[in-house]
Structure formats: C-alpha cells, structure tokens
Length: 211
Image 1 (cartoon, rainbow, N blue to C red):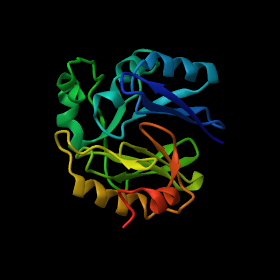
Image 2 (cartoon, helix red, strand yellow):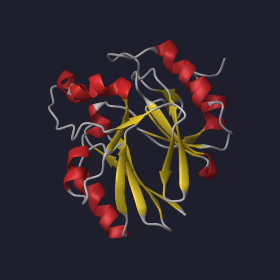
Image 3 (tube, rainbow, N blue to C red):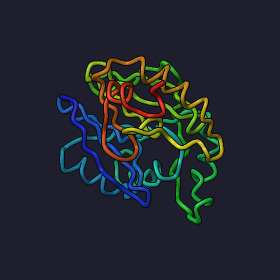
Image 4 (cartoon, rainbow, N blue to C red):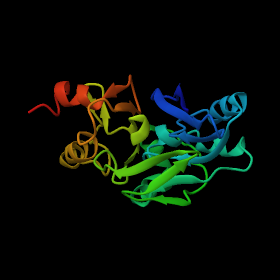
C-alpha cells in the first residue's frame, strides 16, 4: 500500500509529503518544506526508512526542511532535483529576496530528467519536467495509484506564480496542458499549497485553463 502523510509547514504553509511503501517500509520525503525533524520523527513513528528526498523545485519554501531531514536520518538520504534549478538552489531558493536566510542542505546528488523512472519500494514514479514556475520544476506521477505530486504547477482553481526569477506564464500553461491535463481525469493532484484536487476538476473548472 502506498501511504501518504501530509504536513503543512513553514512561513508559506507549504504542503510537504512523506510517502512510503508500507510493505517494504521504504519512504521518500517530497518537498520537506520546513521543520525537517518533524518529518523524520514521523518516519520513525511509522517504522519507515527515508531513502531519498525528492524536490519538485528549488524555492526555499519547498526545501527549507531538507537540512534537518538529513541530520535526523541515518544514513543521510540523498537529494534529487532537476539540474535547471541548481542556480536557484545555490541562492538559498530565493529566501534572501524575502529577507530570510536558510540552510538548503546538501547539494542535490540525483539529477532528475524528464521521463526518468524513480522507485519507491514496489511503486514506480515518472518524473515529468514541468517548467514555468521555475526552470527546473518537475512533478512525480505514480500511474498505478493515480496520483501526482505537482508542487507549484497547478492548484485548486489556480496555477503557480510566474513573477519570480525564472518564471514564465506561457511556459507554465504549456507545462500544465502537456504534463498534467494529458493524465486521466481521476488523477489526484497533491500540490504545494492548499487542498488537493484532480486533473478532471482543473480541466473543467480552472479559470486559467478553461478556454
């Protein structure tokens, strides 16, 4: 069974996810936004081993907890991210723009690419490159469970902001149409902020996407 624990963490109330294959006890932390020790403690409570950290993108409010996850997990899990967001990562995810400083944690050592397959126990996730919010934004799609961890690409009735460095409205809309709306309507969208939605709900009712 694929188990998903959701946390709302940090100054931007970001959704962070602890995802595990309950049969193998293997887990990943997706976008550990803040308070990484909380995520690590939940894994211990559940008897899960965090083997990797997957980042949808490199904004500070999605990786502010990476350092503390790494410090509290043995062995320390490697970080996976798309190379196009390395420049953003190297600038603390843009935290200084908002008057903050963070420890972004260890430099990502797993380079994510479009179409790449990631394993979590017996489950397979497809990496889909979906730029526009940031140049290296990706989403993680598990077809067998009909779920996408979509970061800040699309929200319930809205889309990710494109006014920050590296953002592009046209690129983001294209990413949503090619990487999200091509999935089955019943696919769950677990995003970076706010409540979850589905592909079908956004196809029919998202004002940014309805022609």
